[in-house]
Every structure is written in C-alpha cells, then in structure tokens.
Amino acid sequence: MSLHNRKFSMNRSSGVPRESTRLTRRFSSHEPSANETNSKIHKQFRNAHQGHKPHAGLDPTRASTGVIWCTERAYEHGFLDEPEKWANLGQGAPEVDDEIEGSFDRPQTVDISMTGREYGPTAGIKGLRAAVANLYNAHHREGKESQYTWENVCIVPGGRAGLIRIAAVLNNAYLGFFIPDYTAYNEMLSLFKNFAAIPSPLAEEDGYNIHPDKIAEEIARGTSVILTSNPRNPTGFVVKNPELAEIQDICRDRATLVMDEFYGGYNYTSDCDGTTISAADNIEDVDEDDVLIIDGLTKRFRLPGWRIAWIVGPKEFIKAIGSCGSYLDGGANVPFQEAAIPMLDPDNVLKEMKALQSHFRAKRDYVVERLRGMGFHIKTVPDSTFYLWLDLEGLPEAISDGLNFFQACLEERVIVVPGIFFDLNPSKRRDLFDSPCHHFVRFSYGPKMETLKMGLDGIERVVTKYKHGAKIAQ
Image (cartoon, rainbow, N blue to C red):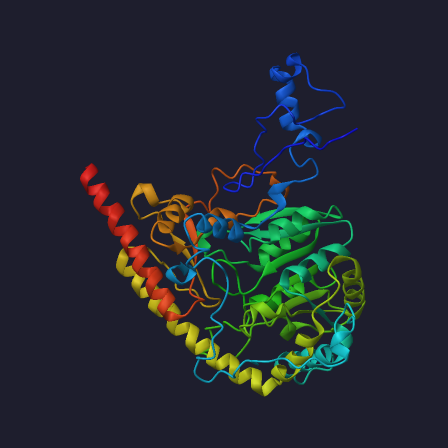
C-alpha cells in the first residue's frame, strides 16, 4: 500500500496542525467516499482521534515552553531577522559579556584533551563533581560533620535535563508544586506517569510566599515529593532561613524536597556580600536528608550556552540520576566540564557573587524606578533573581492582561512573557481562562543596561499610546 500522496502541514503561528484541504490525505487503504468526506461525524472523529491527525504520531502541544512560544511570536514580527533592534526581556538569560566590574573573565577558548574526545561518564567527570562538592562544603557546610563528596554530585547538560533525570527516577508518588513557578516544569510534570502532579496555588496578597504551614499541609494530604524554585521564578522572592530551615525540618524523613536553586547567587537580602541562598546550609546528613539541589553555570556564572549544570544530593539518589542519563541525554559535554573546574574555586566564586549581586541590584532599582514612573504598581521590590512579576491591573483595560500586553509590546519590538504561562497546568487538566496569573507578565532585567533602556522606552510608548486611546474613548 502506497502512502506517497499523504499531505499535511503545520500552522507555525499556533503550533496546531492545519486540517488538510486536499482529498489525497489517506485514512485507509482506499480512497474516501463522498459520504465519508462530507460527513460531519466523520470529520469530528478524524479531528479528535490522534491516529487520524496530520503527522499522526505528533503532539505539537508538547513542543515548547511558554518562553519559546513567546519567542516564536516575536519571530513573526521580525525578531529573528533583526534581533539587535529588539529588547528581549522575556527569556530568562543574564548578560554574558565580560563587563561587570569585579567579575572574572570567561574563557575565550576551550582546550580539548584526549579524554574530551571520548564519551564521558553520564554522571559527569570526577574532577568537576569533586569541585562542585568542595564549593558546597566551603560555602554551606563549614564546620558541619556531614560533608559532600564527589559521589553526592551528578553533572547534567543543563537545568531542564537535570529536572527530567530527577523525574525519571521518582517512584509512584504525589508530587506537589506551587503556582506560579518556572514554565518548563509544565512539560516535565506532564511527561512521566510514575507520579501525579498536584498544584498548590500561592496567595498574591502574601507575596506568593511558601510558608512552612503550607508545606505541612501538602505532606498531610499525602504529598511525598515537593518541587520548587528558590529563589522563586517568576516572582523574584526568596525563602531564606529560618523559614527555609523549618521547611526542611518538616520534610525530613517525610518527603523528598527538589530545590531549583539556579538563582541562588542573585541574592539581594544580605547587602550584596556574595552570600548564596541554598538548602545545603540546613542539611543534617548529606546522604540521609532527601534534598536534591539543582544549579549550574547557566545563571549565576552567566554561561547559559555551555549547558553545564549539577544535581547535589544523597549518594543513592545521585547514583540513579547518573545512570538514567544513559537513556535520556547521554551526559554533559566533557571539554566544557573540564573547563569549568577552575571557575569553582570557593574564593573565586565568592568574589564573583559579590560583583554579580551589586550589578544586578543596580539594574533592578533602575527598572523599578522607570516602571513606577509609568504608572505600574510595584507593591514590593523583589529581593532576588533578575525578574519582576509585573502587575498590569492599573493599566488601560485593553492592555491589562498578560497576553494583550505582550502583543502590544511586540509592536514596539519588546518581548515579555505573559503570566498565564507560569500558572502551571501539567497535562492541561485545568481551565486557565480565569487564571490568577492572567494580569501579570514576567519582566527580565537579565539583559545589559542598554537593552533594558530600549525595552523600557518601548513599554513606555505602549502605555502612553493606550492611555491616550482610553482618554479619546471617554
């Protein structure tokens, strides 16, 4: 049976397959009859049944996160052709230039050893694993009897790969997560069937804080795995001691705590002294406390292109996480692992964090001042990350929700991320039309200052335009 006439296409604007307009699309071994092609019930069945969709084996809804969706919409407005004329305040990436005062220069070249030509261990090379363990012991375990070793560390090719590996080794469990949180959790929590993901909304009026009582409630209803970013993406706030220690005490011997700490270095709560926020401070026994910490070079070392990250945790967990890399991602790039080792000298990292915190706090303050001057209501200034969870409710109605504000910003060559993407909805089980995140956008002040100024100028034009339009309408 020949299928050479099978025709299909993809709607690039929405990621949804287009319905074929040609009669050569085959659904069986014979040509469809007029009775079949003109039948409403037949059309409904074909559109609903995955085996009868164009690209029968494809589910395009799994293809991208909210940030990527926003970038694709920007491509339609010319971002791909002239990125230098755009202010990308959507993607969660820090500036990568060697221009931050006090920061060490990033490598311009990478030597490739003979070992670097070979397949690397899926858990990472021992030298880098040992360097990560030493960094955590120096910054978070000083004076404590229980110390990390290289066997407590797994190197992974980026944060998402690390999260996927963790998900792959979890047992049958209820996994609790909080809303709002990092958009890529959505796909991770949808892929695996070995756990059931249970959302727990946080209160806007409480600054989306994760209180110990909230954790106790989750455990009381049977949750045995808890996943959260800390510092928090997208709200820009951090849970620190003593609350963080109390949360870990509640989870000890009751639940596995998965801590996404990629923004731990962007901490403005201690006057930019270089302190990094980490659950590693409160662990009693590195092999008994079920706490998995994920971090890497991506954010606080400003090397997102290297795709080098790590997971720190009990040896038994790390052994399983390292092994599953053999069928999930194959492991991280060996030459970049080798090049990363010198960067993780504890004294070097402390100096780097001081420089990072001072630089990004100054950008935060500039952005907050500009936005407040435009009429945005920023009740509390974020104390970590490089994000603002920007409330749109005080704007003209036409741009007071995240999607419409995003669309208006595209016209001015500015990218932000609508808040609805952070209302995590694994497997799309909930209706998000009434999402509490709908009137927010995430604004990243990760880019360089000139990009921030260009983006804020564009946002100011949007606000001015719609305020003027609202006055005319009155």
